[in-house]
Amino acid sequence: MDAKRLIASVGSPLTLAVSAAGGATFLLSGLWWVLPLTACAAAIVSATQYRSEPAGEDLRGPYASRERALLSQVARIEQTLAVSKGPIRTCLEEVPKQLEDMRGKVRSLLARQARIDAFVAEVQPQDAQAALARLERSRSAARTEDARAKYAAALQNKGAEIEAREDLRAQSERIAAELTEMESALASTLIKIVSMEDLQGEAVRESGEGISLRLGDVLSAVGALEEALAQIADPRQRRARI
Image 1 (tube, rainbow, N blue to C red):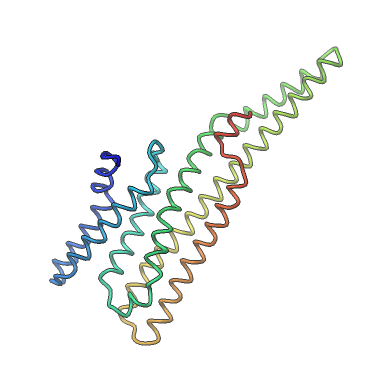
Image 2 (spheres, rainbow, N blue to C red):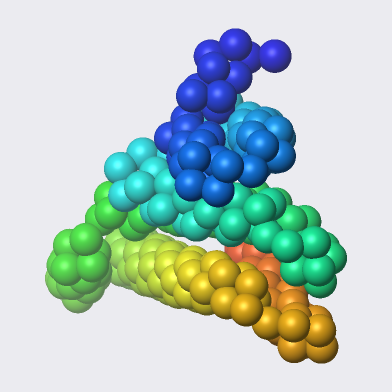
């Protein structure tokens, strides 16, 4: 067990946010059972963060900020659900597992996006096009058939590299769009759970089904994206080829 990662998980802003939210709820409501529920929720968040954070691949900059924002939403939903009425928790029994799945997918998607963006940033599109133009001029100026053939091969390779980088940019955009959709789904989920407190009977069940279905649709879309990304070489592998 990595002690540093464990300490970082226990003392992470997300774990502290869950604990603070639970403490505030206890002070406002006076319900003693909120405290053990908060402790359990904080422990689950810490354990999940420890498991989902691969050693040596820390997210940095905007990617780390994006992860914190999304996981903060997940934690708020978990905390709100933990202090909700029994019938609400029963209707939303699938949601904790869905949130756990989302937590892992956020990290994997952002890690992939960070690698993609770092790779494509190595060469700006205008620089690649300028290099392509230079190769074209060199081929046209070549005096021997052998030299022209070599320049032609270099042109083909450069064109393939440019196309590959454009494909990677499209991947990054798809990941960003999927994360935005996930963020929207989490925000609406939190609002709906809070609104369920005023519902009764069948209305609670219907609202709960709608929440689970919405989160399930988002997870399915992310799964499809992950499957598509799995068919494409990782940027680190592309770097070795180009």
